[in-house]
Image (cartoon, rainbow, N blue to C red):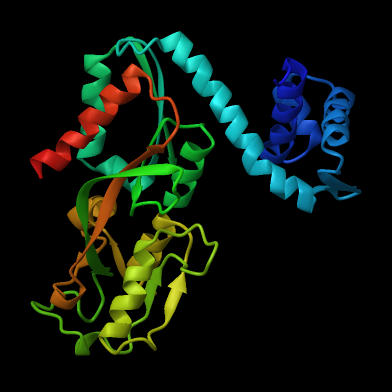
Amino acid sequence: MLMAMEIDQVETFVAIIRRGGFTRAASSLHLSQPAVSRRLDLLERELGRPLFDRTRGGARLTEAGQAFLPHAEALLASMRDGVEAVRGLDRTDRGVVTVALVGTLASTELTTRLKRFRRAYPNVKLAVRTALSREVSALVRRGDAALGLRYFADPDPDLVSVPLYGEGLVTVCAPTHRLARARKVTAKMLAGEAWVAFPVRQGSSGESYAEMLVERLAALGLSSAEIVTIDSLTAQKRLVEAGFGLGLLPSSGVEEELRVGTLRALPVAAMRLEVPVVLVHRRRGHLSGAARALMALLAERQKAG
């Protein structure tokens, strides 16, 4: 059975990684730096392997540290689950529920449903964090968020993905673009156009719908199109507005720009695509009564749609 000091050691190890070093970890844990080093030394002794390579430039995870990290995060998440299970006692009218969601989804009806939840459960503290889809899953996986709202189901077997609805993707251009006033745009008319999109390389933090763009362009014989990869939706919109290329973006993320006219939607039948929005939670994680109530409210859209 793990002792309290051993839990503290694991917490310290994870804090060093998340905070970016021993000094910041010490500050976040309200400890001295020697105390942080002492905890880590005890943990490394028990594991029999160093977890960090310490250099003048800082500390870098060793192979042993990389192997231990997901288990350390899972342990801490499980401990938080236990605390929440005892504190919440499955009541829906109290507690804290943290939701991580892709930033563009804050412009959708999901936000209205979050407001409805706050009105219905005024004693529940609803904390919202925004991130990209992969980051949403990471927050849920390590227990920093009870629920996540992201694009596409997550293949991780430790997560449950609940489909909610499909969001349309819209092809947009600058108002001064040569196609901005076209009543109908064919695939042939897109030849030679550059596109602004999230990167799709392995390990990228970009949204998965960028892969849909690459696949659709290839299917239309436009695989040679230049793609300007930008890891920020806001930056993508600004570049499209400035004429650096076309964009294939979620409709909720460009509503304001289309309304004021800084972006124009192109009527391209061949580019009409839909991206699934899903709710994720940990398969073996504890869901408080409040979290289950919120999940049921968010899933109502699936029934209505």
